[in-house]
Each structure stands twice: as structure tokens, then as C-alpha cells.
Amino acid sequence: MTAPHEGVHETAGRPEDRGAGAEPPAPSARNPPPEVVSGGGARPHRPDGHDARGRPPRTAGHGPRGEPDVPERRIPFPVVDEITRHCLDDDEPETVHVEIHLPAVPDPDRLRAAFAEAMRRHPRILLRQAPSRWWRPRYEWVLTGRPDRDPVSFPGGTLQEARRRALAECPPLDVSPPFRAEVIADAEHGGGCVLLVTINHTALDGPACLRVVATAAELYGGADNAPAPPPVRTRTAGEATGTAPAPAGRPWTRPARIAADTLHPGAPGNGMLLAELPVPARPPRLPGTPAPYTVNDQLMVATWLMAARWNRAHDAPVRPVRVTMPVDDRPRTADMPLGNGTRLVEVAFGPEERELYDTLAAPGPPDRQAVERLLRATAARTRALKSLDRPQLGFGGGLLTTPLVPVGIRAAGVRALRRMAGPWASTTLLSNIGRVPYPLDFGDAGRARAVWFSAPAKMPRGLSVTTVSTAGRLQLALRWSHARLDDGAGRRLGALFAESLAATSHVPGPAAGEGG
Image (tube, rainbow, N blue to C red; front, side, top):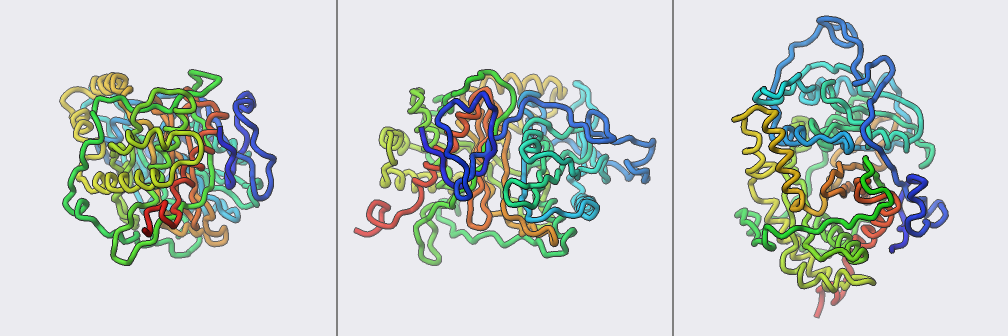
């Protein structure tokens, strides 16, 4: 069991889970208490004046405030949206949660007006699912041109209550737009507020919605929120040619699962831990030469260490760890394509995993030379995988969504295949957003001082790791299915990830491969 780590900001989890594992130390200014949030199954969101699905009263032929309706047009669901729509589960809502911490509270009317104009400038976010029947060839999005409801609210209550809503209450697909933005007073962390955005992942991903938030920030505060230029990466020969990496093992070998640790097996919903950690150090490099590995590679190896050490402590069978990694090549400019724009690649750790498993999974601090070797091997593999030109969900995803049979039959087939292929699903999802490219400056409400994302943690994986960096700090969101982990186990797993990430930090000297 690992000790709680410095820099974690959390509130208490469920009372019945507090007995699992050691209690954290008493809160202090330098060591705030762990912040764990639990959400149950989906519940209807009922804002004032709206029906159970969040829809406002409508006047025939008019928008939500009586304005004339704008023309609507329809587009078929893209591949990612359709596959996600087929696999919806009320017990594990398909939500992406984004929270932006601001030093002051924005003016409600100005913020609503800024979001309204931002959505007008990004019309792809204004959509709802068209009514469908099982015999139709496709699901379709209706681009509404105008919101059916105002997504911005100031609901009151605590930040922990808002986080629970983000885990348990998915914005409906039949109301435009499919996200909500709640402003919550943040008295617990030095005042100010949190802009908490909950997204229905069937329609949008986190970076797409953040692009709209950045436009709203610019409209609200008048400050330039143009994205910073992406870092210049020196490409290797393997990247330039797009050479596929050598197979890391037999494709039919079942990957590792995070060993279950729960007092409530089969419980619905997700739990979540949010933490702020230092960005791990990397070795220096000469100008014009590629870095031996990136922070993303360090996160990848930290995820491997966490999974291997957790499973060794729980006497789980030794299996290869495989991590699904979203890759997003979209620009962050105002014309960024919105929707679900990432492609998924699966990262395995090659022969080094088998050779180093016993050394790195053993109790005690990980061996520095073994960690360095795994980092460099992982960096070569991820560079090659990122450079490959492949469809978002592979070639099989396009085949499964070809409209040769009605959408209802395709949905049943996708769900059946998902159940059968479940044992071969990757160990976990690691989504590294990277540096927030926008200042997110809201004028009199201030500039964002921290940003967290969390991705769904559906079974059979039952775990997702999401990271983003701001101001030289790494914001970590660990999200788990209650069917796999209870909140006490989630806290311990988060502490283990922090220790594993620290073990990847570069230390100058012979142990890191420098010098003689």
C-alpha cells in the first residue's frame, strides 16, 4: 500500500469506503485532503422550467425564446459517434467532465451571452440526434443552428455535488447542445469558482468543447485567447516514413486487467480522483535533436508501473499491459473541426516488458536503469504508432458502421461483438491532453489557474487516466468503474500512480544513462 502523495486535492468519498486502506494524513495548507468523487447511475437532469430531458417549453415554429426557427440540416453519425451510440449504458454514463478553475465568478448575463455567441461561431456544436427507428440505415444528427436550451447555469450547491452530476447525469442527445456548463462557487480552494462542463461523449470530445469555451472566454473578457503554437518536434526517420512498429507480442494474448478491489462488486456508476502533480523531469537535449522521450511516454510508463505493481500486490496473473492512447491531430485554431476527432491507438510494451517485469513490479523503488530502458523503448513505439495513417477506430470500425443492414441490427451486432471481444480489450485508457493551448482568460473573472478532464471508465477496462498540464503542473484525473474499484481502492491506486510517475523523472548521472 502506498502513502498519500503531496499535491492531491480531493473531497471525501463514500463513507462505507473509508475503511479500505490507511487513512490519509490530516489536511493542511501544504497537504490538502484527497479529493474523491462518486457518482451513481444515470439520473434525469431537471433544470428549472425544463422537462425531464432538459428541454425548454417550445412554441410551434419558434425557438426556445420565441425567435423564428433557423433552417435545420441533417448529417449521418460518423463512425466514432455511431459505435459509441450503440454501446450506451445507463449504469455508466458516457460523460466527459471538464472543470476550469477561475479566481473570480463571472457575470451570469455576460457569460450566457458569450457562450451563445461562441456556439453561433462554432455551429457544429449545436446538434441533437434525430428521431430514429431500428430499420433506418443510419443515426443522424440535426444541426439546429440555435440552442434548444441555454447550457449555462449557476445551480448553487457544492463542487462535489456538481462533480457527482458530471459522473452520473449525461446531457441528453435529443436536446441541442449536448453539453452543460455549470458555474460553482469554490470556497474550498481559495475562493473563485469552477466552470464545470459536462459533455455527452457520443457527440463531442473534451478538446472540441474546450475550443468553444476558449471562444466564449475571448468574447466574455475581450482578451486574446488564440492558441499557443504547438511545440516543434524533431521527427525521426521512423516517423517520416510511417513505419509500423514490430509486433509487441501475440495478438490473441489477453491483456492485463486492473485487479478488482471493491467492497461493493457490481455497483453502478463511476468514482473519480483529481490530483495535481509535478511534471516529471526529462533529460536535456541539444537543439535540433529529438528528445529521447516525451512527457506522454513518461505517463505511459507510469501507467504500466501502476498496473503491474497493483496487480502484483493483488496476486493477479501476469499478463501484458496494453494502453489505449487517443491521438489528436486537429489544429486548435478557431476553425478546429468539432466532434469526436481523436483516433485510438493501442500501445504495448514489447519484449522489454517481459524482461523487466519482475524487476519493475517488485516492492520498493523501481530500478532506475530498468525504468530508463522501458522509457526509451516505449518512446520509439509511440512515435511509430502516432505517425501511422489509420482510421479513428481502425479498419474494423468503418466496416461495422457500413449501412448495408438497418442500424438496429448493426447495433445488436456491435454490442454482441463488444461482449465477445471484452477479454481482449486494453488494460486502460490514457488520454494525455497535453498543455492547454488557450489562456482561458475570462477578463474580470481571471485566467484559468487549473484545468481537469476526465474520460469515461466503462467496463471491461473499468479505468481511465486523463492528464492535462497548466502552469508547469500536471492535473491528473483517475476515473474508475465502481464494479471494479471502490473509492478507497481508487485513492490507493491514485497514490500508486503518483509514485510511478515520480519514478520516471530524469535523474542526471550514470543510472540515467549519462556519462561513462
